[in-house]
Image (cartoon, rainbow, N blue to C red):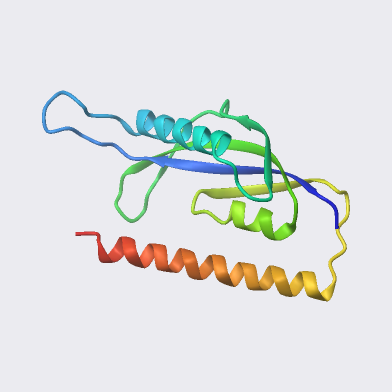
Length: 144
């Protein structure tokens, strides 16, 4: 199988960070924009095995949505990335993030996967889900 060209969208969350005084407080929109810029910089400047970044688009508007759990608005800053992946496993590892929203395969028009490729994909999905579960568990354990 040849290289895969894809477009992925990540939505980075910004939460209000009120300061103790009048200085240093940021609203959710400012926080989301800072996080988006920071993540775009990391993706642009740190090589990722099997991934070639072609374009990063930060032009999407920041938007807010209501959070049912805490009853507050949450602000999201979308980031769209066009990239080429050497393998479908590389693309999977790159996109398996909490901020992942959508993906579009630009090339090739059709994909044919054999038994071995499907097995490798399923193993990679399991590995990434396990890593994410461990990450969330560490966050919960250190929450206080």
